[in-house]
Image 1 (cartoon, each protein chain N blue to C red):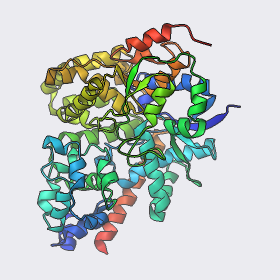
Image 2: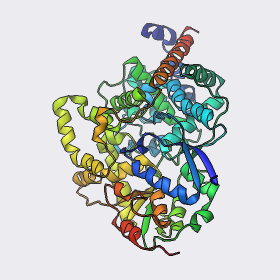
Image 3: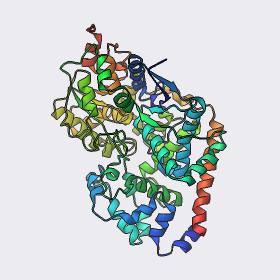
Length: 303
Length: 208
């Protein structure tokens, strides 16, 4: 039996061939090292994300998340649900909070769930993967597995919005959360604690609908990373990762900049530091290649 | 419905928002400090005609038409900065979503507002099979203003799309289906029921 077991909610972007598929690849390798077992919730569905709000309304949004709770309870009663995506985690937590605080919403949700032959008896805990790492495993244990420290690599910890607000990670401030910097140091790299864009919004879904507004945000986020001497950016959120990475070419066109900085997930840094190869770390999934990490991942490990 | 609304809430737009909009009963708690506007990422790009605290005052002043037809709420990026900074802990992000959703339902929101369009596209895409089809979502957005504009948009974004395809993060085969839930029937039925219940509750408030 694994040391830590959870019901797993991977979310749409983590699926094969989807925009954060390399995130999942690296999470799987990371979890293997840390003896964490993730069991996918059977037939899980989309959380509705934030942007679904106008078409969704209130109750349908919560019912959508509640279906995942019901399936998790049915197949893995009592297990905490872990999400790797910031939006999945936020959407599910919000539903948990609203249903817990409103008997009407709860009974309405149950009535709708009946149509799918499901019910909820107990509200599950909803955790983000970084909460599992920090709270259940701890920095000390995480650091023990580092066999290939990312020495000399300077990394800007970009926390973004939805892993940070409105819920955030316990004990961290909304304005200046520290955990990502600590993770950067834990893998042997150099953090940038005064990176001033660490909680700036990447534009979220407006990157699709109103790109010029989102790209103005992305420009600030990347520019500040360069200003602080970063070689790469790291984030815990799939949309932050995609927005900040894939639109750099568009930003360059719009602003005459020459941005070309890799944007990584914390789990990718960990897999490389834990001795994994480039493929296990999902480095082949970068649009802007992380050459420095690829070089490190090709080196022999210190045992 | 609109006649009923006019009858019930005549000269009391605040009450209409309180009863019909998600988290609308918080609007009266605003003390006009403006921290939300100062914390909003899109407000700094002159995107908002009326930043949140201004919308709240307009609601109290009964400016129904101006609020509901405004493009302001649609500039919310769901960053939640306003919520965590509000000294009165008003759930501003949710109220912005709520007012936008209400304006959308009533058909008063700006028709071709891009984020309004994208919101509908996203929800329908996700709930159609239970999971998001990223390829169809992107294509749907490009072709929002017709075929010619769609091809232009596609070409403008070609390098972004190719980069993603090369990295294995955008699958062109998704056009033929892609990821989906097994129990789509159950999902559709429960969402239909949820919509019915929500409508019934709103109408009940109207009749009360």
